[in-house]
Image (cartoon, rainbow, N blue to C red; front, side):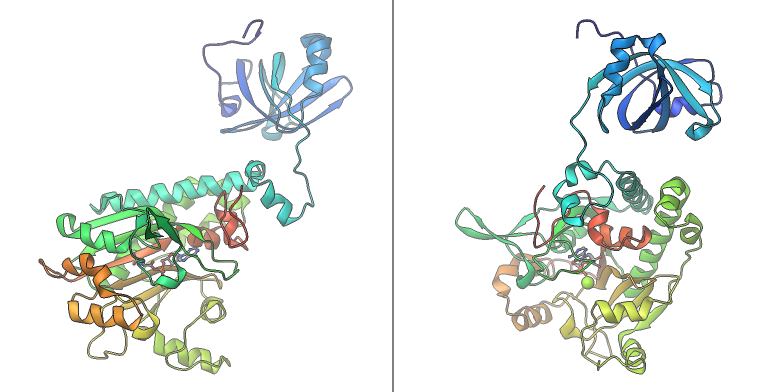
Amino acid sequence: MAGVPIAPARFDPVARVFAPDAIGTKVHLRGWLQRSRSSGGILFLMVRDRTGLVQATAKKDVIGEERFAGAEHVQIEGSLRLAGTVAEDRRAPGGREVRIEEIEVIDPGLPFPIFQDQTEEFLLDKRHLAIRSVDHVATFRVKAELLRSLRQFLEAEEVLEVTPPIITGNPAEGGSEAFVFDYFGRQGYLSQSAQLYLEALLFPHERVYAVTPSFRAEKSRTTRHITEFTHLEVELAWCDLDGLMEFTERMLVSSLHEVATRRPRELEALGRPPAELLALNAPFPRLRYSEAIERLQKVGFPVSWGSDLGTAEERALTLEERSPIFLTHFPRELKAFYMLRSSPDERTVEAADLLAPEGYGEIVGESARETKVELLVERLRAIGADPAEYDWYLDTRRHGSIPHAGLGLGVERILRWVLRREHIRETTPFPRTPSRHTP
Ligand code: 4AD
Ligand code: MG
């Protein structure tokens, strides 16, 4: 661009302003205007970049009348670059400000449509802009750190990251909640879970995981269901349910401690003191399904052995807890076809749901896997599926079958609990629900 007054080889991050040796030095910043005001011939600009927020002040006699007028007309979220000297100022946030010597407006912007007291619906319609809010920025920084620390743990455990398909020819978790689409004249399904593919990949690699989007065509409008979510799934060879629960505990404790250590300010700002995460420790309490039924009956729930436990029941079981708890040994009919029958009690399966405390409910689903082809076929028939369509999966049990177990962790579910969000949609930038697939 011709006539650009500020064209340094590199720009400084806003955080540079707050470095110990920054006072009196010149910085070149670029970013977006969070808010501004003018008072007594001085313009106060709050400028944000990915590293922070800083106050910059402009005086007409320093930058000239024309540039001052231009800067005055920058809207909230307008973009600009500036150069100036760092000075101490006790009234400024962080105790420092930048005294502007040069300024250039990149895009003054139209009036920003988002301000206080707007409806949820409006904010969801404007989600592509709403994600610039302080809360959303903090949320997605924590989410990135959670994913990073989970991967760090898995890497240390020598679990291999693999890339299963999203387009599939048979639903993994039962047909009714799968999105079906036309795949060149045949039925395709958006993946509900990568599990069946992870099981196949287990044989050459023994420990595998994947982070993929999973899709559920659940019409239920709850505060914990979205139709597309981030699914972290792990499959471990030579593992039983106890081993798997132990692994899950270690993974969660280790990654949440990392999140608490590396993102304390964001956690604090969102209402979760990091100390509460640092206080989490293995082992997590374990509760059998049959014991849970008894507990629920005692507090008046109309449930009996065989009842499915929904949001209200999970809430009641975890409201007073401070740690996640494992709910184990569900009736076989309530659970997916691939789960291993318990022995000697064949009515139950070797499965566990990890329930988050404080009423948040299920965040991880896991089980040891059935290895016997006849039992898998029997269960597939029972749920109305055609075993022939799963023949490729049954092959995995025909060539060196071994005991194994695996888990699926809902990243947004964990965040909803960790960040105390009322609705799960606040944990993903562009939430997908039955009533919304835009923006
Ligand atoms: O319990 P689910 O359905 O288990 C499976 O899909 C297994 N095949 C996973 C495995 O063993 N590899 O889903 C696993 C987790 C749940 O515990 C929950 O955290 C999350 O995925 N989840 C959802 N999160 C947000 N919205 C939804 N609609 C979700 N459905 C499941
Ligand atoms: Mg589940």
